[in-house]
Image 1 (cartoon, rainbow, N blue to C red):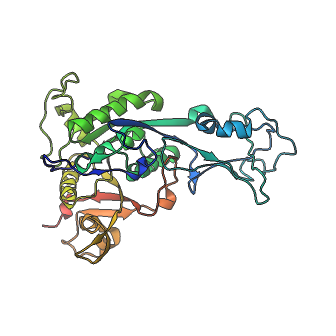
Image 2: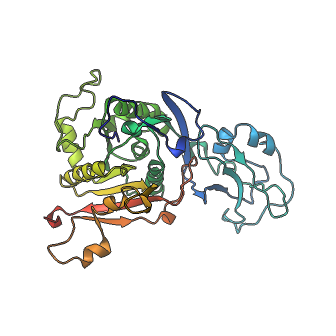
Image 3: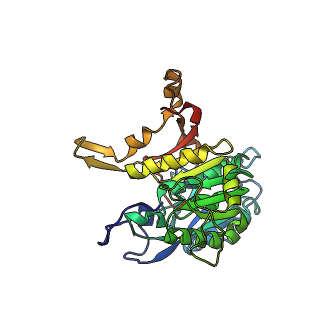
Length: 392
């Protein structure tokens, strides 16, 4: 999301931790690649299985593609293993071992390490040749800034967006919850979450503010539609200024005219009202913007179909002179906008908050995207809105 404000003097630059391995002092837009498949990581490490029917060493396709020569040389794809196969009970799940682990959080280089057992011997896993098809491996290619001013933080990739993308991937791999939905990504930034959702959604509105951020969103849609196999026609990049009323000013969409490229049409407004799910990632970092964000969310959730918001954030701690303690900036203000289910049930009738949130257990959200480390300060909230219960 593009932050408001800004003056004529040069602004301080900030950088997402996700970009730490990118070229230093890089100016302009950089391209990073994030890999995922339907097999999640376990504790940040990719797990493969032994299967009893194959003696030939076969390394999963994503490692074959991303090994940078190190794995290819060390494991020798064409080697034939000697010795009996491991009995796994016939289901291919026994004797699970670790053979490769991402060793960095940035995708600008993906070195891999090889695991050894307790005796120091190299652990080699076996599988059926077609167990992990190349079609199950995906690359998400994101154009982004390495650093930016606070006003343009939407040009960067932030951890909360990767976490929310993991959540969307998990739902799409294990359920039909998001199949065929109409959705809105609010404060989309690089549009990473919307791009992942586009694989299964019927229609997705990717929204933010500012021509530079929206142009970058549109570029990322073009870059990824082929690799992720989605129809660009169902992905609409639109400007949504949280300071403006909803519905926003409408016009005739014209992709050739920069001033008309991101306007909403009457059909867009009608489609957006049908949305049943909203997504937002890392939009909580300024109290003023948090106020505007929830005002916008309430307007969107009050219109048309019943909607649920999935919001991911990273708590960032700094020393507060007011509190004389280390606090997560803006978090308490964010939490003041909604109640948990328990708080909601305990409130007297007529005094119940309109927004009710549930903290999602991240233990139930496996990591699919390999090129980041979650840490302990990330959260996902599921938030619903009942306008009739709004406090007055």
